Length: 226
Image (cartoon, rainbow, N blue to C red):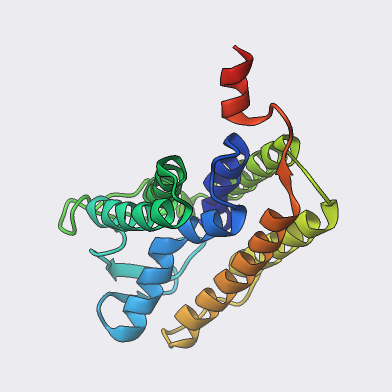
């Protein structure tokens, strides 16, 4: 998935006023992909382009034990959660950030061909929805739309930054789905992915600074109401 990874970030930002801001949670949602593309550029992990390997994506992600194993993702989640918790002086904020990082593996499990692992070695896992575009596309759009609706409903602030973020998400997703597919690997692939993430992180930080939780909204407010 691409924008579907940001659905847990939007939902987490909406769920509690004690959550980190949206920009931080967007980084959490794609932290393991940031690490993966950096590792690909440095030769630590590897990918190649195999046209037709799936209906929607030509990437053969054949060696990524440190980022896309469940154990590896859990380590990234723990490290990021500790860093956020220390920076914000909040165990709650750190825990929320860690859960968003960990969500990446489970979201990937839905769409990837069997290339994910539990601890870096076979068995390789993946439900393969990238071979079912008529399922994968509506699912990704629905997850993101529902999470974005929840975020807007639980927060208040100017709508323009949020609309700009939505436009950017949809634009990058459309390019990912319908743009020209690469025929061979080049460093431009990970570099372009990293650039798109940085743009989205900046826009999410803008949205996070401009919106605040509604009084009584979120899980914390629901507990106080009871």
